[in-house]
Length: 307
Image (tube, rainbow, N blue to C red; front, side, top):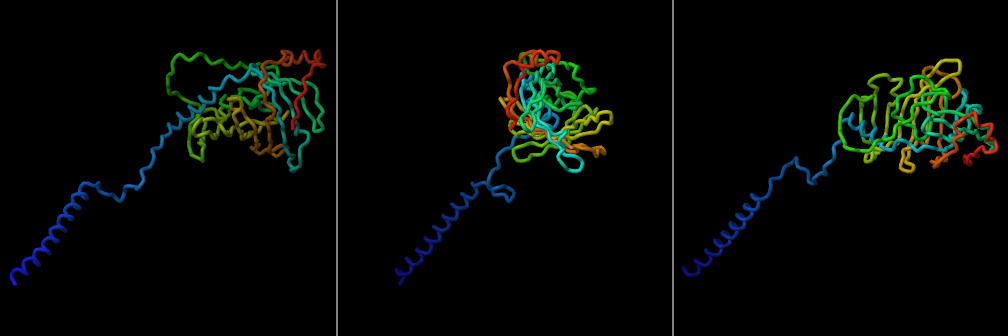
C-alpha cells in the first residue's frame, strides 16, 4: 500500500513545479517588455517640417517670385476684357480684345484691337501697368512692386528693373517688410496667407495669396487696384489674379475685378484673360515709338487668332 501511494504524490508535485517555472518565465519576459501607456499611439506619426515664421514665409515667397526676374525683354500676348453694364447686360463699349507687343524695359507697348468679326484696328501706343489709368498687365508683372505714386501717362518712362547681380554669398537678414502676415492656413497642397499692410495701404496692394506648399510658387493673389473715371473720382478695386508657370516663369492668366466704394456705374465687375503669350527673341524698335507708326503701316504686325 505504501509503494502505491508515493508515485501518486510525486506526479502532482511535478506538474506544480512545471507550472511555477512557466509562470516565472512569463514574469521575466513581461518585465523586460516596455510598459504600455494609454497615451502612446499604436502607430508612430511621421515628423512634419514646421513652417518658418509668417514674416519669414512671406519673404521666402517674395524671394521665390523675384528669383524669376527680370522678365524676358519682349512679350506678345492677347488680353480679353469683359464687363457688364450696371443693368446686367453686356457692355459692348468696354468689352474688347487687344493684342499687345510689349517691351519690359520701359513698359512700352504696341497694341491692336481685334473685333468680334476678326477685323484688326490701327496701331496704338500704351504702357500697361497695374493701378494706373490703363488696362493691367503684362502677364509677367511684378505683383510685389508698390503701386505708383501717381497715374502713369503714356509719355512717362518708368525705371527699368535691375538685372540680378552674380551671387557671391548668401546672407539671411531680417528687416521690416511691407506687410504683416495675420494668418497662414494649409488648404490642400497650398498655403493661404492673409496680409495687412504695415504702412501706406494704397501703395502696398497685396491682401491675400495662395502658394504651392512645396515650391512656394504663386497660384492666386488678391490685390487692390483703382478705377479711374475720366473727369471724375477714383474708386477702389479688388483684383483676384490667377497664375501658372510658363517657360519657368510665373505669369498671370486671369484677373477678376470688383469695384466698390459706392461705385454704381457700368463695369462693377470686370474680367481679363491673358492668352497667346510668347516671349519673342526680339521685336523691331519702331514698335515702341508711336511717331514711327505712320511710316510702317505696311509692316503693321497681325495679331494671332484670339480664339
